[in-house]
Image (cartoon, rainbow, N blue to C red; front, top):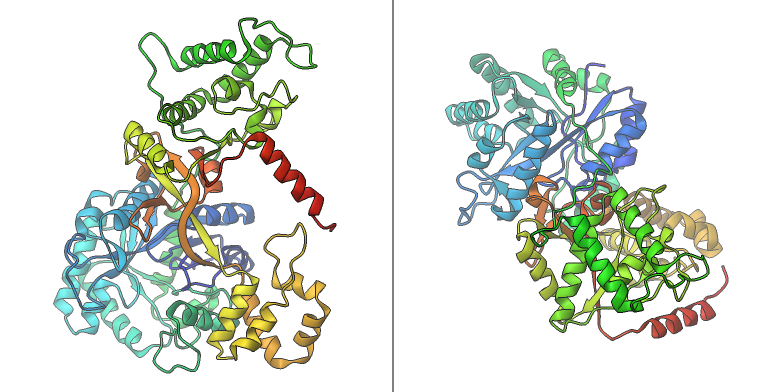
Length: 588
């Protein structure tokens, strides 16, 4: 193959891309391509999902981002002109150094340069350019903008500026052709500029959906984003239906005059090699008193807690196993040390101890952590695992390597005090909350699509309400609803309008709709968070990761569930609540 897609927006270009990662990677594989890139708008939300999907299909993942570059300083937020607020620029990680730098660039766009979009400037790019290949992007790129305005000398200066930043072999002028006359005019100038300035060319297709037939559902998605209807004339749209995953033959047919630029896509792909580590623990170091290391200090705390919880006799029987309390404690401690979680328990003990010392209400502990005598004697939990014969192996098992997961409830009025304490202790740059995504679920997407199609609200609402609730099934899909609801299936098969509405909804179902802050998730990093994960900023200004809780865990980072409770629950009331749930649960 001589062509690789290097300018691609997935579902994580929120409400702008309907190109689902799994479908995209499978399509690339089907077309015989050995590599593919992800370059979402200003974010890296999807890079880990994309990386894993590519590895599963035997496709090389090229991790990138289409960033926004401020025309002057990223701190300058007084500009008023819409298109003058930022330029587009595509960045691809050539190696792990480039990937690390890309995370920093994207993070700084949110934490320092956010103004309508997460913007960076040349200062940031010059600081973190190593290991990155840059493409001049679409018509919204700086070089292309100047060309469209007839400012050819300014366009050349911009091109040289980026070449000087990234290096002669790492900056490419980008050719695109989606049937737009302005693109063809720009391409003619870029060809000439490439010869004059000795800057290589590359061909891309600005992918926003997977297949050509996805044009209409993508158009509907843009209407959802902008609050418009399909009937509105003055609305955002991608004209021409050319923004899909094209084959090599299609791309060569578009650029018969630029075969070198087509083949440069494969050359760039061959240079890109990023390896992501999963399951490698990256716990922050817990500072212990002088004369101790983490292991000896944890042992001291546990044995002091053992005496406080059970009295002086550490050789008292431990449940029905014949073990003594000391044997059970030593066994758990040995597993904790072997799995590398000593600092984890010290960190959790420390902030729970802080909360209790400051009269902040802390829950008794939930989930599998209640099976740990270490958690009990450290007062992380208040449920005696010996009394209730709870199994430690449900919490930590050497044969199933996974991060410990301790759900901790705090009083909703003072939870932030605990987070602030952790932030002060480890540094605010190392402690951030975790992102979560709202999605276009079955009922909601039907309502959204119906509004965009300008169908009567009552009519659309009645269809959405036909998505049933099924016991023990969360997030029921439209396809599942069609299986179990004969009335809905009959309407779908006999009514053309219902069929179109549901078909469009199925295309968009499951796409992330918006990013928000997880209600409980906090990550504590061993070094500044932007060195380990890309960061974003919430609507309230708070900094969050761009990776979800499950991804944070997979990357070996310390994730804490610091949950809010609004009323005090005891183990007994929790047991009663759960028994009531079971009693009234309808059979499947």
